[in-house]
Image 1 (tube, helix red, strand yellow):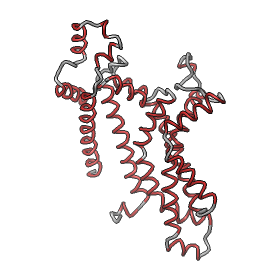
Image 2 (cartoon, rainbow, N blue to C red):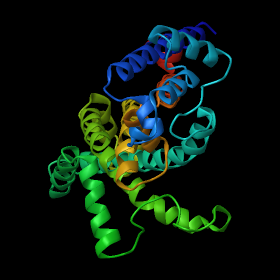
Image 3 (cartoon, rainbow, N blue to C red):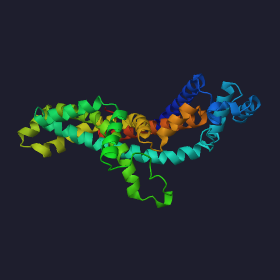
Image 4 (cartoon, one colour):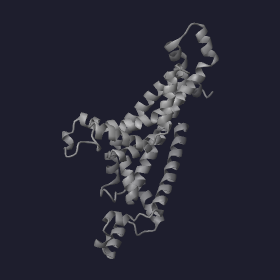
Length: 323
C-alpha cells in the first residue's frame, strides 16, 4: 500500500510541475489565442469584439488567475473548452486518444517483439555475418529521423506503388459507419511501420549485449559442460536473465513512442492525439494543450509503474528485497 501511495504522490507532483511549465511556455510564446480563434484576418474583428472574445474565454484575467481557475476546474473534472475545436477538451481527447492508443500500442508491441528477437539472434550468432548485418541495420535505424523514414515510406508505398493511402485515419468522403476494419488497417499500416521500425534499434542492441554478457557467465559454461546447447540453453538460462533489462527499456520507451507518434501523425495526417497537440501549440489553445499534457504524463508514468510491478513478478529477489 505504501508503494502505491508513494507513486500516487509522485504522480500528483509531476502533474503539477508539467502543468506549470506548459502553461508558462504557452504564455511566453508569441502566439495570440484570440487571433487563432478568429482566424488570420483580424480586420473583421473590432477592438470591442476582441475584448469580448478575450473576456468570454477568460483571457483578460491575469495569467496566475487563469492558471488557478483552470486548476480548480480540473479538480472538479472539467478540463475546459478547446478554442480550436469549439468542444469540451475531454471530448476532443477521448475521440483522438483511442486512435493514438491503437497506433502507439501496435507499434510498441511490434518494436518490442522484433527488437527482442533480433537482439537474441545477433547474440546467438555473435561475430558472424548475421550479427554484423543486424548491428549495421540497427545503427542505420538509430541514426534515421522518424519523420524522414515516414516520408520515405509514404513516397514508396503510397505515391509510387499505390498500395496504401497517402494519409488520414479513414477513407475520405466515407461515413464512419461504412468504414471497414480493413480500411482502418490500411490507413494504420504505414504509421505503425514507421513507429515500430524506429523503436527496434535500441531494444535489439541492448538485448544483444545483455545476452552476450549472460552467455559468457560461469553458470552458462556449466550448462554447456552438462551438454546443453542452442535454443534450449538460451531458453532455460538466457531469456529469463535478460528479460528484466528488456522490460525496463521497453516500458521506458513509452515517452519515445508518444513523441514519435506526434511526428508520424503529422506526416500521415493521422487524426490522433499527436496531431491535436501540435494544433493546440500552434493555435494557442491552452486548455487543450494542458489537457493533453496531463493525459500523456499519466500515460508515460503508468508505463513506468507497470515496469516496476513486472520487475517484482519476474525477479523473486526484488520481491524479497534482495535486489
